[in-house]
Structure formats: structure tokens, C-alpha cells
Length: 103
Image (tube, rainbow, N blue to C red; front, side, top):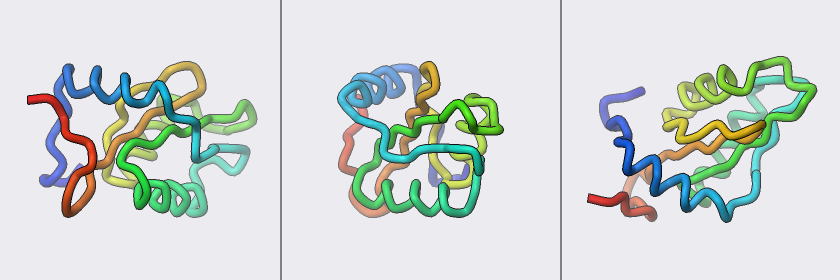
């Protein structure tokens, strides 16, 4: 993580998990695993939203927790939650964040 991305507090994670309930997965991690195409797709998703759901398919070679940590590191984002085969990732906008975290 870079210095510009501070660690999330517990209440920040709870708030983001609540927002993430209504989201549908926009990026799918399949048999290719963590490829350049997946990272590119995730970065494109961050252009539209700061909070992104990723679905780890059954044929993915990576463990879901391992995949979440690697995706977060590759995109300089936070792994908010791993629930089942779904990951919730958060990266604040560079200029003006859309999601205001609780004080």
C-alpha cells in the first residue's frame, strides 16, 4: 500500500460492507487467475465506482483470501471483506472521493 492510502478502521469497514450489500459483482476471477486482464478490468471498475465486488469462480487457481490480498496490492486498494466466493474492494477516488467514510 502507498502512503496515501491509510488503513481502514473497523467502523469504516462496517460502513463499506453495508454499502456493498446492494452491489453485484462487476469483475470475475476465473481459471486464468490473477491476470493483467483482471487487473485492467478492476481498474476500469474503479473509474466508475470506489467500491467493487469481485467474484472468485470455482475454477480459479487462487484461494479467495489470497486472491483478495493480491488484487488489493496490485490495484493499491483495500480488501474490505471476503464472504463466500465474493470479495469487496475499496479504493478512494484520487481527486474527490464519492464515498464519505464516517468520522
